[in-house]
Image (tube, rainbow, N blue to C red; front, side, top):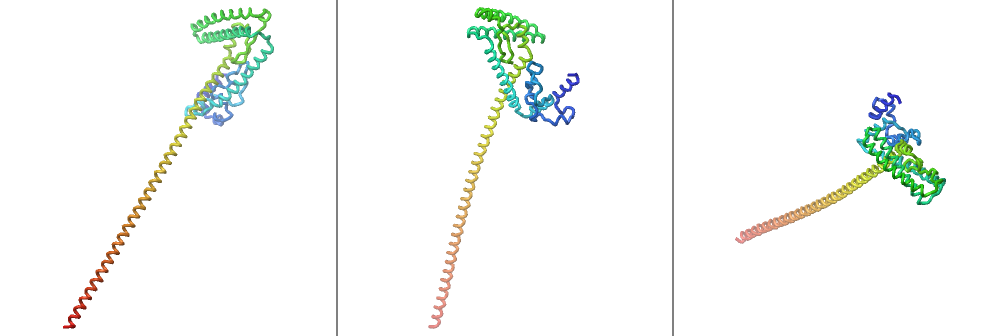
Length: 325
């Protein structure tokens, strides 16, 4: 890649698709199903294993550093939950890798000379020490390349101790079987990357394997998968808690609404009863007033009749008195 292309890729990674106003690049959004979500999270096996013995070629989905920058900017504002898609992708890839590992183990068991369980355990011990030596040497080389010479020397001292243990383990393994069988190359399948490891591999071969891009790439993929599983579990738990909290809030609001409605109905009933009582009292008062009014009217009429009768009687008396005179 030229210096100009490297600079462009760096700008894309930092600023996203809108860095130079190129509208054609913005036609595909990072949320598009055609975009590789594993690439956005920097864990696509096609990127990690590129240039290794297990190079997978180009991914069938879109890879663009500018889209990754867009995703990183957007993910700060809202949770897009792309980890689930990436986790499914890596789980499918690792499951296929583990299947190949099991098939390779089966082929080795069928082709290599069968040995007893005791001898197999001793061979396994040699393999484990080989792996430990290879990992330590790879780490020492990495520290040396970083300029940490003191730590690198300490690890090399540990390598010498493991080599002594390996020598003893090889002696035990050699003494447990015929020389002809011991000379046969005993292979083992690496549990991480499915590569074959020999029982008699030298330190250089072991360091190249455990410090190589293929083995380290598979370690990166497996570690990223574990991280994604943890992140997805935490986010799902958080979503479940949020969903439960919202449901409880809705139920609480419904209960309050029902209580408020009940109180409203009670108040309405109370007001209705009060109105009926007031109407009843008003009607009773009106009736009493009407009754008293009628009683007074009857009393007045009676008194009026009584006075009229009395005046008529007095006139009649006066008339009779005058007549006799």
